[in-house]
Image (cartoon, rainbow, N blue to C red; front, side):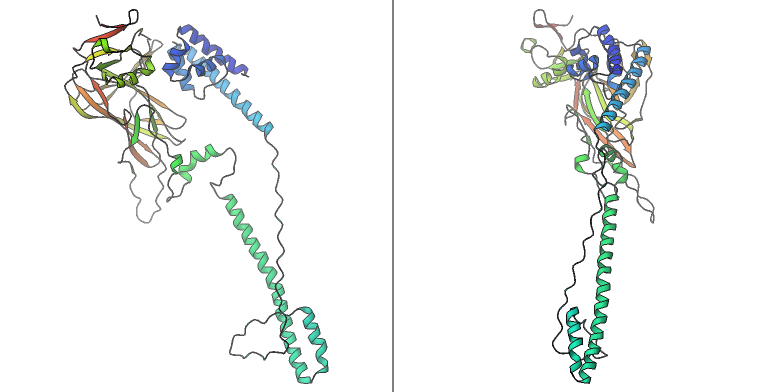
Length: 467
């Protein structure tokens, strides 16, 4: 059941959605979430884990600055109420911890006591190390001592001397064996206690997340990160792979202990190939208009174009989502454009994917002129709710709780360009480079200047030449 705080938050969110005039499906597609998830947000059945998605939804709905502040306040209150409910439920369900009784110390096994020989053995020589004599049973000692008085005086003296030796040995063994057993058990208990208190030991319920966040700092210098915990930097549609040039910092001076590099690369996802969809997206197709099928829904346009051998025309508006894999900060030092090939534009027709454009929202972005001999990223100010969003350039900082979204406008007017991106990062004494491309292949963008342009007329279901 939704809390009163969640209902208060959902009421404002639904008011903004209804006022925008957009359907759940359109807003969900732009936010890259399912329609049912958006329904749950607006009904109060679920609270988003991060405010970033809420803010994007509010901005898409044209929320004012005051409404954004109020929405943020309600989200914080609803999230706190949700966490408080979880903690109270967990505390009620948690059983009282019982103190285990100490394990009983097993009694040592009695040492075997062999019977003595029938006759007395000769006394050992002084210059030889005597072997330990077997310890006779008490009954044997008594019998030997009581029977021998009837014998001669010499034999009695020998028997008495031997008896005294055996009694002394028995006393030493009786004292030594229990002491050794107790010492061994105490040593074992100390080792068990040390093993139980060792850092990184499992069995502490609810600390998995904490172990992940500090794992880099707690690992030894010779340890390497587990493959199961290594982040996968590949995106669903695009890809971002670590470069072989990733390196650690310089070696420490001689005589000093080397420090373990704990940094890990961030994850990069291409969340959109046209952050202004469905506006301004063209594909160059080597097909007559009569043979080109109708355009699909916005989220399926890229697969539709690939099936027809299409190439991005005019510009590509990439949206990159960058996030760290732990609470340790990752500094994003720079984002560079690498051009593999630049040639004359393709002589194909351009087919538009958009209609009904004009949302009035322009996010802060980066302009990339692919016609330049050495393309670079130029920060561009945005416009949201009638207010200017100042331009911001690299470096940026991300972590598992701090995400950055970059909107790139890569355009070309006179060439056919094949290119990709490289993200330079630094964290925990380690630096590296991530390659960002189109699912393992470089991006390709060709100019549409002077090429025939077609728009799809849904009334007569035909492609028509643009006026």
